[in-house]
Length: 378
Image (cartoon, rainbow, N blue to C red; front, side):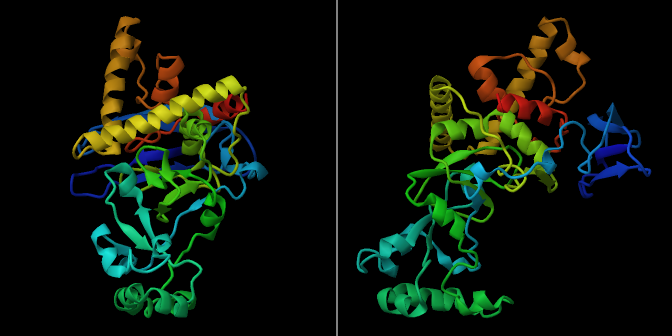
């Protein structure tokens, strides 16, 4: 028997938001009883209400039934196309735009290649900060000192003292370079005009395009694909469901973690007709542009808030649709919104249901992965 995700009661507002897994095992192979929380309330009271579903089937090591997506091998077609971004290991590498001229921009030949735009998770989910980073990848210390003396002096005072205390020898000795330089990202992004990025740990699984000159932080997962069709597949319901089954979960909000070796590397991209590919690409381009425009036009709106609003509207619509269909959606289906079957088709199905990746404390539909795999493969 296994319960993969259960609240720890009695929880108060001042206590940690702890969730636990419970298992009972015996030697041998047999079907197990998987119980999943489908509704919870009153966790801060003496009488918490917790409703469990029950499924009898083989239970895998990740406390899931159905297709064991965590055991699938990496595909050669996806090899070398995804990685985490750079790790600075020194706040002095980041500079505001108005500091660029003080560090030699416009005066030192070739310096523009080493002052690059930079994004981390909050930049993708909120308005970008507009910061730059000093990226000296491939340059020796003497070359930096002679070609870019202003940058050298800046890093000598803002980065080197911190690096001198770093326990890793290579980071101490190469203090003018990022601690993690992401050579894989540099290889597969070379020659691209843009790439796809997602925040590694996030409440919602959102993919978006970034211009190739932007360096991603090591808390972003970058994917070396620049076509709209690839973005559409990654943002689709099938891949988001896949990522929720194969990835991890972390933090107070029980947010999904996009583990690229378990999620992207073994994911089978479909092979559609040219017409189908064009349709998906057009929708993905429109979606990416619309989301970015909404954040740019609305002060203080974040991507997370945008999806919170969307989730509320969908739940409200589902309740009304269910009531009109006979009351099931109004109360008969006790599953959370992320698991309930929803009406919808065509563009609404792809855009709406495809981006539900992991709400706060999501109840994971672990049986969805099998359907995701078979339908993705066509």
